[in-house]
Amino acid sequence: MILSALLMAGAARCASPEACPSDSELKLAYLLHADEELWAAMQAASAATGDIVLMTQRRVKRVSDVYCGELDSDSERIICRFSLVYSNGAQHNMASLSRGEEGWVIHARMSVWSDRKGRR
Image 1 (tube, helix red, strand yellow):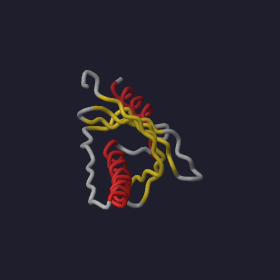
Image 2: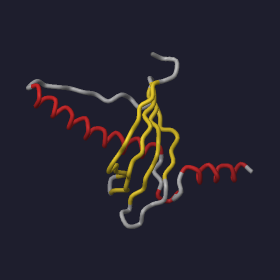
Image 3: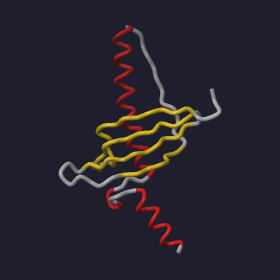
Image 4: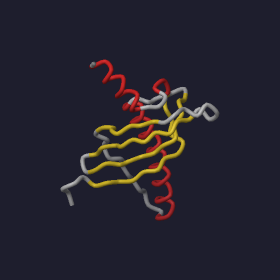
């Protein structure tokens, strides 16, 4: 019975389990993608103001609510929905990913932020 529950939990996470990133792989892909966005934003802000602009990322506590669809055999990409939990809220994401030589890569991403309940 426990084995069937574990199998069902794995099936609920990904439509294509063989092509599904783990939580740590998803977090790393997000952080690498966010680093690129952050670098571009810092360069743009520095160019606009003529000053040195520094920005940092918040620490991701965990990844939750992961669901990935079927792997598209033509593009070798998969669409995943996942949440990144921070100390002050959560970022809900939908991303197009593919597996590269050095791990999972995010090609496009949309996100929505929600504050932690009970905080203002």
